[in-house]
Length: 183
Image (cartoon, rainbow, N blue to C red; front, side, top):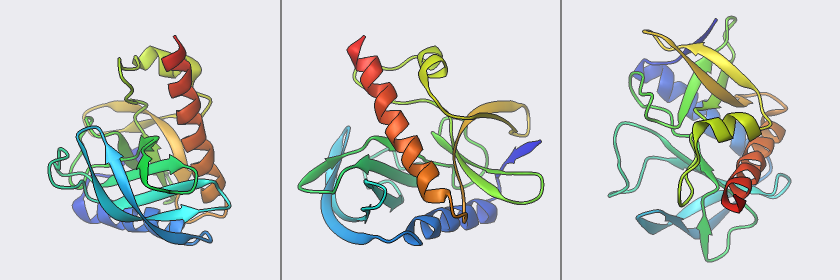
């Protein structure tokens, strides 16, 4: 069975591998303003032109529900001015936290996957059932200690198909959000 990582050291190692996997793809560093629901800040993101997406890896900015989680934000198109986040994959930095939107999951023989809990934000919200019915992606079941959780596969870290998997996930989140807004 798949296991959600929960020790601080395993989570930090997985976060480092997540960022390193993105950095292994031809990229540019672009300074932009990253907008989020309660504010914005000037920062540097990775622009991955071959994928048509940008990525930010780090910790939440001051005032954005910091908590003990990583903050990995993704968007579509070359960053210019202020960019909007399409989705976030935010694993816990310590322990298991079902409130975070991301998780790192270890497969039986060791490979680690970045996963998402399938909770996406738009004005008015998106119900979990809507995401389940409409998201074209792979749902996995992973052990989280006291129980199991259903998670969407984002990408396997450190593989040659990492970029295409990440791109597919980000574009699929955008598609599902557009469907939900159109309702």
